[in-house]
Image (cartoon, rainbow, N blue to C red):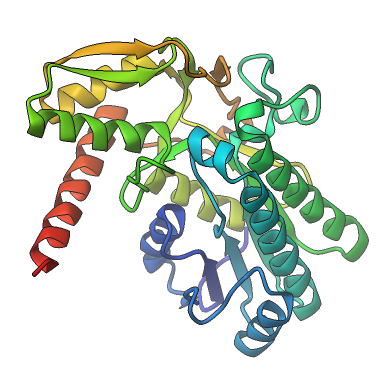
Length: 317
């Protein structure tokens, strides 16, 4: 077991949802936290990334920086999703190896697994079938990242690992309807429908696909646990252990927000992958379990969204 006490720990992407959760979680580890905003460091630039790591000398890196988004964003910006994520991963991993960083944890995604993967999805199903077309650009970049981690372990002996979480949500999520994931989009749209007094809310597709949702604070706790305890070239899943349909998720969001309107379906829009339930038995063997239930987490996330909306309105002249 590796201790983080006294170590220089860099959270790459500290302002994002996972990065912010890692910053909260690491407060109790008695480590020196390093951060760099986009104005200071563009991780897509190799020379900048190498120079920053050489100067700051992190001993542990959590690579949570990424370009992320939902189905619409992936479909609209395929080149950006592929290039940006490839560049970030390649630059940080290579620079970390050159600088002798002791531990690197690369954050992946459940979308790396085949569209028709057997359920629950074990790590051994990677590259066993075609990807889901609606997010293949992001998935290919993340597959390349975890393979890069494997390659640097094999060739250079680096203690670099890759963790694959299921769908995440929580404070600092992206609520922009053009680029958000389904849960954050539901919170934003149901909230707006309630304010307008709309009689119904429309969703894409049938609502029957099943998804697994994990609160980001649980994910951060798992990532810290893996940084301490896990050292293997195989990626490791982080999941909540149960899934629900998209329609059930919407109903849960409606209950939390207090919206009683009906639900309609745009069946001309894609459903995406039919089901994504992770097999998280390997991380469970370390004694890790999620703590935050879905409706509890939804209520917390909605409260955070309301607080942010209030601050935004207060800042306007």
